[in-house]
Image 1 (cartoon, rainbow, N blue to C red):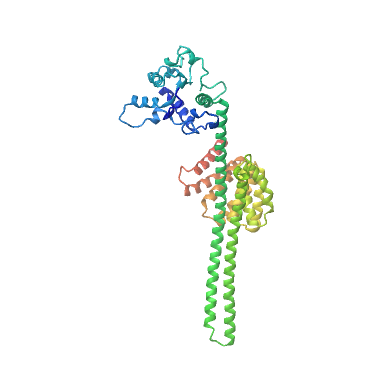
Image 2: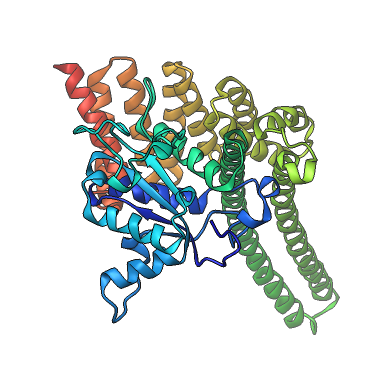
Length: 470
């Protein structure tokens, strides 16, 4: 075949409409699969240089024009380097497939080597009902080829069969051994999966850190702003009193002086509160820096180790968490990293970090939303570890804080009731489970629509309870 011609399409897929799913798979996979460029002769390289594309498929690539269907098909065939024929009993009987093969040979100097029959089903050369080769390809030199085969072998899925046929067809067109083709495709799949994992974990880390930082900073900023405002009012009142008493006797002058000193003290207190607010912001920043350091250590591009895994980096960083001196940073980092370990299946390691977080919040910030969140998280870890009694104890602690200090936080209150109900289910205390799941459902109805996923969780738990009660 004339490999020097500048073809518009690298290949044209000829197929029976009954085989459309396989044709669509073949066309998309050829265009998306990366090729071993360095092993391919320059004359066989696609225009893209990295993928076999474009590949013509009539349903997708036919342009709207004044020409009739057959003229557009003929133009595409003339401008295709290869003709890929999906061979099946259906395509063997297809008039259009036969016409496409004939026209390809007519416009490509009868070069049979430019035709790639790909077995989808049936048997080539059987001449029976299961014959899969069209008439124009029932030749000894075609049948004797080791034709690409998309038929699944024993113990293979249909997808595996299609993938094998794809690799064989690429190997034939590019004149490269199958192992190199498959190795390149597998390497690209691993690269994409690795990038997806890194992106997902990055998003989780950033989302967790920003959420904690935002809640913490917002609460501290509001408290400090209120306190600063109160101190400012007090300072103004004291200054006014000092001004009114300025003209009085020495005794009144002494009182004015004291009030003036109080005003100065109030301003100093306001500045101290401002400094405290800045310190809290710094705590959130250091927490983010610690977690960012964990992520950077797991990034192959920055660590220089392509085999590094995020979970291994996290385990290596756990001793550093124990060394953190500032309790706020230590509690925040321990809770976030513990949550990541729990979601990664490392429940025992997660439990140790959650215990650190809970103890610090109990000591320094009892009754706060952060404290409730730490009880909720450690309860979830105990549940996954099968310690349902401990899970119940911590979920009840979280619920008590939410109901006492944050009665309008329906979302977290509902979540606690649902978790408590789930633990009672595992303990086979179905009446208690039913009571708490129904409470969770009543709160969910106040904040989410009836088709929300959290409603589905409640109904699913109710179904489990009724099923176990008979």
